[in-house]
Length: 319
Image 1: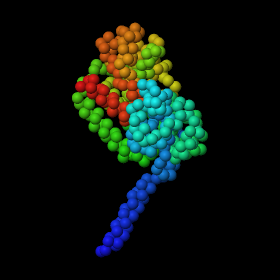
Image 2: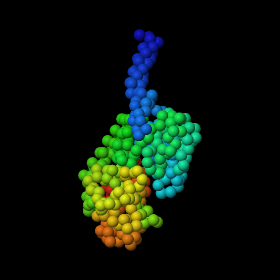
Image 3: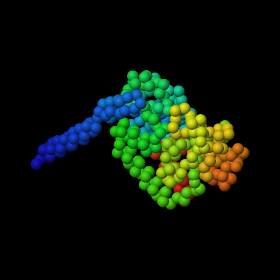
Image 4: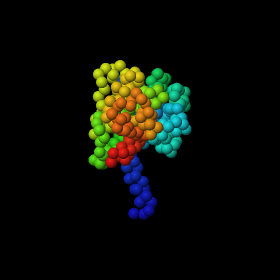
């Protein structure tokens, strides 16, 4: 066989292979995705995803989904970088050139300018742009995602299905599970049950994470038991339609923080010191026995990146 025939045959084989790969990928699409607004058909795998929710963006980055732009929160604070992206994944967003859509107030014009082929909107929370759903739907297929009743793993799996990144989602979860098993085996748990919360020192208030929250689910995976609230507090202090937090303030603050140990998400040592300094909490067993721990300012929103940070900090604290 001369060299010309060899290369022709090689190119033919390569072409057949690539055709097979393309056919295999195409066979997974179109897909039907159901959300609170019905069933939607995605004709092909999205290549330009816009996330209007800063909470969802971290999970999209973790599974290597092609997110090109994201909504943002207030910039330059202990939770976010100078763009308003969350610190646990801001470096990843910079490397992938993720554009900032807007800060706070959603903008359909900013979304349209990115020419997306898929738009993702959170159903609840401060980063929800649900009010602009009709405008978004006129731009590109728009899916609504409820993250307040899911673990970050469940959210990752859902996003994997929506974006065709199932294998990447499964791989990330497997990595985390392996690390969790190692930490759980070595960790010595503090007195149980525990209360998990975000503490606001200035207002002397707290958002308590429920068993249905991503934070609560993570602690339970590690073997922690979440404290049960006194009767009546949960129904009277729920925040809007959210399932993951319960607002505590005033007289209910001390009553609601009834765990033998307290874990402060989205907090650092300053927040621990503020809890100890609050005279209304001085009688709590967790305060009296110095069993209040901060899990880092990056943990307000749990995704693959911040969940791994939680494991690192718990492992260091309770090894």
